[in-house]
Length: 228
Length: 392
Image (cartoon, rainbow over all chains, first blue to last red):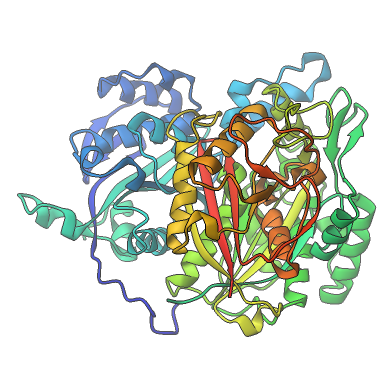
């Protein structure tokens, strides 16, 4: 709720140039279903998505499910785009939200230290007990070195993303930003990732009219699969 | 350009329950890290900096009697008590109304209610879902009747400093007038065993940047700092602003730094650029300085690459350890105390230079006019942050 006039009205128009969603055994790219699986568990599904998209990245199998979901979503989102070539690595940001942080691996780590007779904490588990490792996995894979943050929210909060990412663009901290929601706890998983770019930096070509202006309402609609 | 002023702060560690108490103890060269015998937190003896539990309960009881006398002590977790005490102290010492729709609380943490993970130690009066950070933050927000849902940032060990950057940006964007950046982590076997599994913990109190450094010491901590558009509400007479800030990612390794320090240096350079400063303009650096071999080496390289090798620098972690989510807030609060008093504190635990790029570590307390202070932090996940504070 804003009661005062914005002292810095942003003249910059920001666009969502591509978006991906992964939930209920389906993958949507720009609102169109690309892959459907009947597999029930998150782990099985993530493996099948990995294979379907012919991914070759052995580190994937060491990741916890939260990172697997973030990694796959970014992989599908960035494939076939030129953003990694177009923008300097330091100008590409990653701003994500989720609800459960890394609770699944938090519990797994605690299990390994609870019993003093079976005490074996492992660094390969402990490292996944912070949610921003999902940012690191995406950053390492695609060499994105700019602004990064993980926010925790009960539900996807498009307002925070809109406010914060818009300020990063206005302040020239980013020229491109990968943003959205990556939530995974046991077999409940949901991701919604999108690429944000400045309208002025996108070459006019076929399909430009399909891009969506970044604002709270539009992000909410894309997240819920409703028409813009 | 709109200024974001830094205001009243609070600091809670083993060394006390206010920023002023910390300054006094640090001046007197006291250290809060002790070697604890093996027990609940770790099977063998380990150096830690732990908050005095009885002191916490006494102060919290007083705070509750004043504000919410009908609430029971056992309906709060340790982390919630710390955050309520810390934020209440900042409110008491400033003119900001936390229920105002233009005020936002930003919470920085790794684990929030770390003691509720796994659920076995949960007291009956605590709902199970307070293990979720969103629920923990919702509980704190509703305790203060805050109009806005608190924002939670969980970005490993840079969370605290990043909360200050985020708060400053949201104010500059015109979304809020006041932000209380608060953060903290308690210590349980969860964190102690985890860092020990990485062999990151020193068997002795940590020695940041020293030649004989061999690991970090963990510290319990909670801190709060006020950011506001209005200096008159800040509660401190000096005008100190957030002049620049940046957060970068190494894109190199999930649990180790990019040892060239290049990416860390980019964060520092960007913070300086935003503040329109050259390296010689910086009077003092409050470094991350954990006491681990690689991270201190990387930070020294980054500072040197940025042209800051001659600037006096300290790490506060030699006093009260690495306070995880609180570190950036607590250490900023103390750095700002240095700016206000023009007094720099020695870097506890440091004796002999031990980084390949020499930097100017404070070996004694010193008197120096500080107009520009750089605060840095880095952490797991390859993140690096830097903030410049300016006295105007």
